[in-house]
Image (cartoon, rainbow, N blue to C red):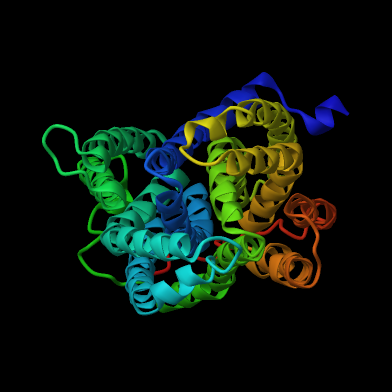
Length: 465
C-alpha cells in the first residue's frame, strides 16, 4: 500500500523542485490580494464589501485567462517532453493572441454591465445606504483595475510557458518583487502616507496595477535575454504564425478548458450571490474566509499544476506507466499535505477575522466559514489533483463535465433552491453546498482509475510547421 500510494525520496525531491516555486508564486499572488483585502478591511466594512464583489467579478476573468493558457499548455508541456521547440513556440503565440482577445472582451463587458453585476450581491438584508456605498466603492476599484488586466494576461502567457519548460523560479522571483511593490504602494496610497493623498480603494487598485506592470517587465525582459536557454523565445514575435492544424487542435481541446474555467469561476460567483441573499454581512464574511482560503489552498493548487507539468511531459515522451505512477503518488501527497494545511487553517481562522475593522457578527460568521473550508480541504485537494490528471492527457471535454458542469448542474441548483425557497440558516446552507465536493471525489477517482486520460496528443506533430 505504501509503495502504491507514496513514492521514493528522489520522487518527492523532483515533485518539490517543480511544485515549491509554483507554491511560492501562488502564495505571493494571493498575498497581493490579501494585502488589498486586509488593508481595505482596516478602512471599513462597506469599502471591503465593494472591493470584494469587484474582485469576485475579476476572478472570473483571471480563471478564463488561466483556462486559455492551460488549454495551449497541454500541448506545450507535451511538445517540450517530445523536444519540439517549434511546437512550444507555436503554443506560446496562441496564448498571447487568445489572452489579448479575452482581455478586450472582459474590459468591454465589465465597463458595460459592471454596476448591474455588482448590484446582484447587494440584495440581502442591510441598510440601503451601505449597499449604495459598497456599489460606489466597487465601481471605483474596478475601473482602475481594468488597466491591470493587460499586464496580468500577458504575464500568465509567459509564466505558463516557462513552467511547462522547466523554469519555475523566474515567475516566483517576479512575483516576490511584485508583492513588495504592491505592499509599498498600498501603504502609501490607501492611507495617504509620505505626503500622498488618502485614496482608499482607488489607491489599492493603483498599487495592484503598478505591481502587475513590474511583474510583467521582469518576466518578459529576463526571458528574452536568455534565448539560448529558451530557444522557443527566439523569433517569437517575428510573426504570429501558427500552423492551421495545430491552431484548430488547440482550439478543439482548449475551448472546453477555457469554458470550464470561466464557467467554474462564474459558478463560484453565483454561489456567493446565493449566499449573499441572507444578508450583507454574508458578503463581508465570505470575503474574509475566501481570502484566507486562497492563501492556504495555494499548496494543493501548486501540486495540481505539478501533476499537469510532470505527467504532461511524461505522456509527451510516451512514458505512460511512469505517468500513471507520478499521478498517483503526487495525488496522495497532495491529499496528505492538505490534511495538515487544513488543520493549520482552522487554527489561524480563529484569529484572522480580528484583523478586519468590522462587526463581531461578521467576524464570527467568517470564522465558521473558515472552519468548514478547513474540514473540506483534503477533499478539495483530491478533486483538484484528479482534475489536473485528466487534463494532462488532453481530456478537456471530460474535465469540463467533471468540473464546471458539476457546479452548474448540482451545486448551483441546490444553492439556488435552498437560498430562495427555505429559511435554512446561512451556516447550514454554506456547509451543504460546499460538502458536495465529496461527490466529485468519487466521480473523479473512478475516471482516473480507468486510465481514460493516458494519451499522447503530440506524437505525430513533431517537425510540422
